[in-house]
Length: 114
Image 1 (spheres, one colour):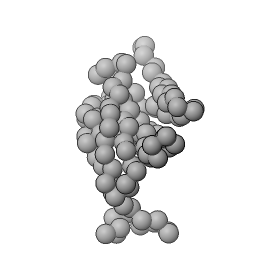
Image 2 (image 1 turned 60 degrees about the vertical axis):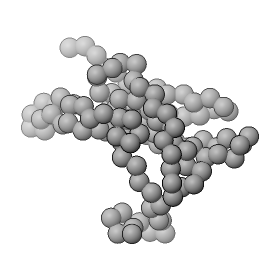
Image 3 (image 1 turned 90 degrees about the vertical axis):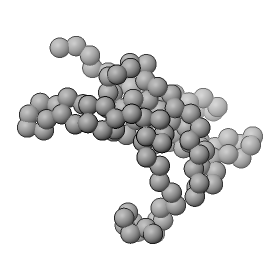
Image 4 (image 1 turned 90 degrees about the horizontal axis):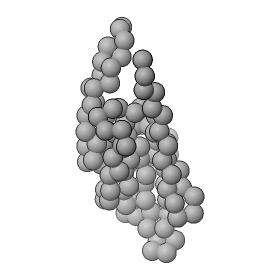
């Protein structure tokens, strides 16, 4: 109905949860006073147009991987693939995704160490 996301001249056509994109809740440790957080965090959204077949894709980054969604029909988005993180079971908050020609590039910050 659009009342949950008030916007000026915008209309929310659909909504997907991070779980429906393939992500799994993880615990992110944090020092007091914040304390740990359990859930899923997203960090980037990008788009790609396949000019050969006139398909539109949404590309999303979550803390445990990245997802590809067919958004050609924006009222009925279809999750296509989940690309898991190369550092399993470690939440990576900052992940970024961009495209160049027919390639998709994903970068992630990982600050391991003590």
